[in-house]
Image (cartoon, rainbow, N blue to C red; front, side):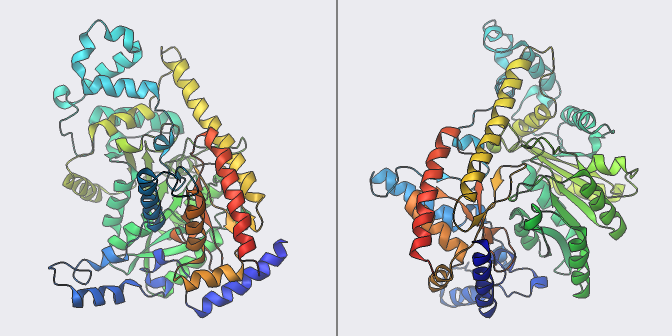
Length: 531
């Protein structure tokens, strides 16, 4: 059966090449892909007819080129359908929207970690720390930790600004946590606390990208934060393709090939982005592969941008997370040998505190002069929010054996991670049981990225609707079932292949319903468009 679909896929690829749709729109701003921006004609027509002082033709062109698929057109449609369901129950063939488009655990029912929230509550309202009833409502170690943190905050007020790099005492705690994790020293002065990992990525792109002549090697598929940030800062995304047939493997030969191709076009490649565990692909890199990547960056003089925000989300017993800093230090490389930035966030892991906007980057291998420039850019935003800073320190220093909260904390953490592993397996099996669908194992992170072999008739129907085939499929899926997934073209994919990203985050009692709805829809879709 797969051979049949492979032939169909090849036919589709030929059709697409003829219609210049080889690459997803998110990459249209990258000169190296030789794909013109679709925004120019729209901007010129709007600017000529607009009477407003601001039009598409007069705003920053980099904004027009920027796209962010995980909150794109499919999600906009989902929100409209949700409003219609509220206004008129029964108006659609489903009674709720199931958001599988974004890694937002608590919006789908995941409960926060009790210890973390106890400490946050006490820090936000320190007046209750001295009340007798507090001892009965909060664990003793949460009370103790809150006092320790408040002593480090200026004025003991979470509503106050902090140092632009983050509260020193919290950076000390995070550095100690990194050292305990990796077994190598960490310097609190290397830590920059940020409102989640995204602002840290933006800071580094602002630092590295001077013009379209500067490029960033980025995985395809990728998390669209990177393509968006590269576009906003006027650089060039240099794609390297992960090998789907090898479990989304990262091949050094592919990195070398794309680096040389970029150089031949006059692109000065500044950095390599590696997402481990992978988003949207869910793979976990092996240690040997990580060593090869570190060596590649050292030899080529590239900054290594290590997106490690899913480091707690590992679901297979034969894989473990190892930070790139740990790998580089184990190879004998220090600050003078390799420039490395590691991104971490409190939005992911087992904690899923997306709305608290906490995170950090550990910046190593830069000269003091460049460090001053990074600090200057961070200072423009004054500081990251204090609650996020506190959470980042708690994530890197959770309760330990002997603490009152340790048993409940461990039970909550293990319960969330084991449930995510089960959900990943159920959804993965369900997808692989669908006609013309192949899905690699989710080893880590929070997503599945199945490949769908769409019939030629479906591709032509998508073309008639002036949209990409995977968007066409996802839109039809939403309208029929209420399930929200993101088209693979929002992340990038090999030309002529189609995918979608689906989170594993809906609560376990919702998963059977998702499987049932998806299975029924897919059968009907394939019958409707069968060649």
